[in-house]
Length: 105
Image (cartoon, rainbow, N blue to C red; front, side, top):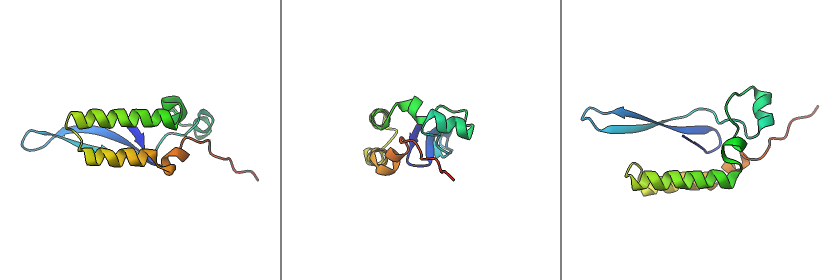
């Protein structure tokens, strides 16, 4: 499972299609908070992005490794992998690794 984009995690689920082959489908769920403080404030029990990857560069390494492995195993087309890598490199994704400013009144 790899967190991608701004608001979702891509989760791989294997299931059988009618001719017996395995089909991979993707489901979405909200991303965990970026930092421990945000996670605690939101009462989110999942590990923060900060804890999972350290920073955006750590996240990028894991995305690139996962895409490379899936392409090598012929479970993902190289063109589709390039889309995942580009999305992971985007500013939208990089923002998820920055602490969110808290609103003050």
